[in-house]
Image (cartoon, rainbow, N blue to C red; front, side):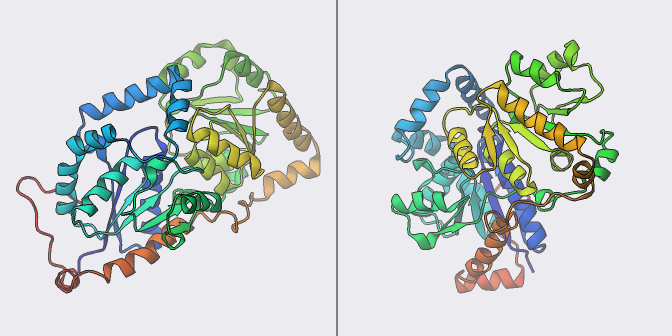
Amino acid sequence: MRKPRVLLLSEGFGTGHTQAAHALASGIKKVSPHVHSRVIELGKFLNPTVAPLIFSAYRKTLSVQPKLVSMLYRTQYNKSLNGLTKLALHRIFYTQTAQVVSQLKPDAVICTHPFPNAVISRLKRQGLNIPLYTVITDYDVHGTWINPEVNQYLVSTPQVKALLEIRGVDPSRIQVTGIPVHPDFWEAGDKVRLRQEMGLQNMPTALLMGGGWGLSFDEEHMKLLTSWADRIQLVFCLGSNEKMIAKMKEMSCFQHPNIRILGYTREVSKLMDVSDVLITKPGGMTCTEALAKGLPMLFIPPLPGQEEENCEYFVQAGYGQVIHSSDVITKRFRQLCERAETPHEAESQLKVVRKPWNRQSYDPTSCAQAVHELLFPATAEFSSTSKERFKAGIPATTLSGTRIPF
């Protein structure tokens, strides 16, 4: 019998959207081992030459003209994709996406970015009969996410659900599941054991992350951070920012046994477990992973758009604080040191596994569970012919040319 198939479509603007797709795929596998998932970044997959150029231009605009990005985000906030963007998507993606879906024969499509969400919505208007589930990967909802063809929205918070309802989405089509994180983040690990495994000291530890594009701290803050290295262990996780990594490793202030400088790593879950505070950009994925781990956060002033909304949510909910001045860092580091200098407090901090935040506010398993519950009623709604083929395990027909493996 053919296993049920879920196709997850994302886009490469930043890393969070695709990271959420991979996290959900892993969560689905854990909750439903018999369900097969495939993650595709639509632009990179269908246009490997053009897509990196578009993403590079977006990244440069964001860093050089953040006010322009903020203005565009705000002026288009309540609007769906404009006509020019839809035309570009039509020319670049629609036909090829239809071929991909026809070959892979998924039982449901899940989108974690507005662009593939718009593409699949158009295909559904043209007759594609596959359930479309949309995971909104931030703590706000821009108008570009909204399409009437979406069967179910999986959203981060009740506030996002309310925003969708204001824009006319039926409440029955919205579930509050939280943003999905990889199963590695579903439980907190043992701080002492993991510090020993990773060659770190048993001392107050700050994890500094900047997302896939690297940390964006100014020189003044960097000097402040390193001035605490005798008392606070600093782990810098800089993603793909190779220039920053090379620069920091050459600076004398970072030549300290209690400072660790990392690039891209697959051990973020463990790094969060060994840390006492996270200093980061307020990206939706990183903050949600820290939320799942119960790790307090300090936020670098956010970039325009979604980061601002993410930041506002986490600050208002009491999970973090914005670094408006160096005093914010100084105060938090002093608190960590004072705690470590109190023998009973220090011992309890090392022995007790940190508990995640209240699962009533965020359950990291919820999104994968929701997909499991949605998927099987959806497969039961196939036509009689499709249902019999599904039960019999008859392979899906293919287009001419190379078949895309699921």
